[in-house]
Every structure is written in structure tokens, then in C-alpha cells.
Image 1 (cartoon, rainbow, N blue to C red):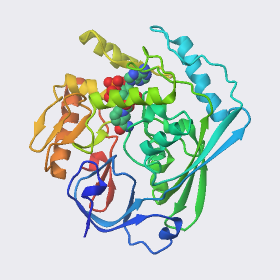
Image 2 (cartoon, rainbow, N blue to C red):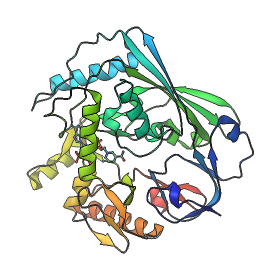
Image 3 (tube, protein in one colour):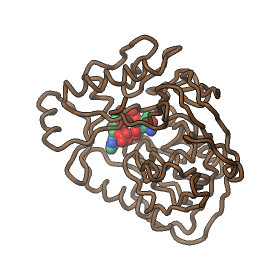
Image 4 (cartoon, rainbow, N blue to C red):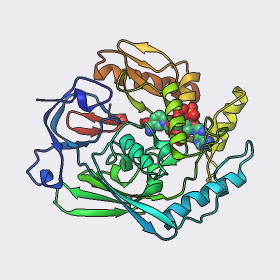
Length: 367
Ligand code: NAP
């Protein structure tokens, strides 16, 4: 039996039949006992029971940096142009830093091993004077896992900067490189979540990053600040996260447990009749993104405890292990929270964390 307790940030005591740390492409060429699942930092997973298979843990290292002379590639231009146009349509406080001209004469290409810790990468890049990822500071997990969920924070998603993703198919042994478009990045989602692609092990991620610092500070908490460099923005993001979110080093958790729901306009208007302030963000298609944490709070589920599990007092979207939690206790509180939100608002909450049972990944409805 392989002890998974140090491979899941919920810090649950669970086991798999086998476990292997993968440090290079060669390690993937040895036969692998099925079923198997792939883990990065284990920061976005919930094991609902022991797993009767092999766990492959991505530990491929390496950061190769090259500076390219030339204008910003289209991928980067797109992000900053979108920010400028969002900004020009937005009412409220003026957003700083996003009105810079695209006069970069160089950019960076970075090839990163899938097992590199994302936050360590961000720190290293900033140290070397390479900006772009600072809003993602302190998100736990590895670079290889980041594209799967298209992880995001403070208005930035990792997919914004991914030029391509290199994969090894555990079924066929084929190497396949996915372009940004082929990755089909969406809100906390990508092609790598589709069943067809679950046999793909992400070996490397290729990023493109700007040469010049263009702070992205649309989110509250960042807006009223003047950031002189990426380090200052990173420090602010870290401070904000530390104020609100439990550090998995000390309190077991997997970050946001549920995704923010997208609802029709009418649903948002109905909520506005009941509450003075409803945090909601209008989308291009007319729907609204609601804050799952706010819904959980209003359903009286913030800071609740059931046995060794609770929801975090400062951010109800995070489910925490208060000591020696058992997987079924985490499932029970998650089900309780989603049921309360459903009965109060008629809105379904869907987990952002991936759920693994005895035979592999499971859907929320199967639990
Ligand atoms: P918050 O500021 O309390 O805001 C609640 C929600 O409203 C956020 O989830 C965010 O959606 C949305 N939001 C806030 N300002 C927005 C804006 N200007 N435009 C569009 N949407 C906006 O959130 P928080 O809990 O302190 O988290 C802050 C950031 O860290 C968020 O971006 C959150 O996603 C991120 N975070 C990520 C994880 C993770 O596991 N990936 C864990 C914790 C926090 P979005 O979530 O879509 O940004």
C-alpha cells in the first residue's frame, strides 16, 4: 500500500495500491499497473476513499528560459487588449496600469517541467525580472497540473500565457504537443479534463511572458494600489490570500471547493430583490458569474463544523480538515453545503476539486 497523506493537501490519510514519483520521460516508459491516476501537488483533489490502483506523481523538474527579440506574440497581445477593452466598458474606479502601449521589443519563452511548483516558478521568474504570473502567487500545486484546471486568481488564468503543453500518452506511448487553442481553455477547465485525454501525462508546459510589467489589477484589493514592480504585486496578492485563505501547510484544504456558478440574468435580478449587495460579474453572453463563497455564506454555511471538517470562517468556499478528518466527513459537509445552497437559491454548486474513488475519478453526482 502507498500512503497518499503527503500527496494530498487535504491531508487525508488515504492509500493507493502503488505510487511512483515520475522524474523524467523515461520513468513513464516502464509498465504501469492500471487503473492509474496522475497527481501534481495534490492541491485540487479529494480522495473519497482508498484508490485501488497506481498513482503517478509528476516530479519532472527544469526551467529553460529564452529571451526572444520581437514584438509580443498574439497570445499576449490578446490578453492586454482584452483588459483595455474591458476597462473602457467598466464603470466605477479607474483601473491603473492597463493602459500601457504594446511597445515591447522582446518577450520570454519558458519551458517548465510539469513537476515544478508553480509558486516557486513565479518567485524565480520575478527574481529574474520576468513579469506576468504574479496574480497567481501562492496558488498551491505544480505547473503540470495548472493547465488542467486552467487555474486562475485575481483576474488572471494560466491559460492566458500557455503557448503549448507537452504530453506523454500513457496508453500509446505517443508524445503530443497541444497548442493553446487545442487546450480549449475555459473557466477552471481545459481539454485535459475530458475522458479521452485522461491518459495524458503533462511533461512540460511552454509559457510566453512579457518583457515589460503590465499590472493586472481589476480585482478589489489590487485596484487602489500603485505597483512599481511585479514583486510588489506578488507581495500584495500573497498578503490578500494569507488574510482570507488557510495555508495548506497548517490546515488541510484544497482551495476553492466549488466553482463559481454562472446563472441567467433573471436569477441575478431575483437575488438583487432580496439582498442589497450581490457580488456578481456580467459575462459577454449576458449571464452572471456569482461568488460561490457568498452563496454559501448566505445559506448559513460559513464557519460550520461537522466532526473534524468545517468551512473556513474567512472564505466559506474552502472546506478544511480540522485535524484527523476522514474522507467521508469531507464529502458529507460538501454535500450539506451544496444542498443548503440549492434549497435556498435553487443554484447547483459543482466542485472545482477533482474527486477520486476506489476505481478512479468520479463525478459529483456519483458520490
Ligand atoms: P473574492 O475577492 O471574495 O471574490 C469572490 C469571487 O468573485 C471570486 O471567486 C472571483 O471570481 C469573483 N470576482 C471578484 N472580483 C472580480 C472581478 N473584478 N471580475 C470578475 N470576477 C471577480 O475572492 P477570493 O476568495 O478572495 O479569491 C480571490 C481570487 O483568488 C479569486 O480570483 C479566486 O478565484 C482566487 N482563488 C483561487 C483558488 C483556487 O483554488 N484556484 C483558491 C482561492 C482563491 P474568480 O474566482 O472567477 O476569479
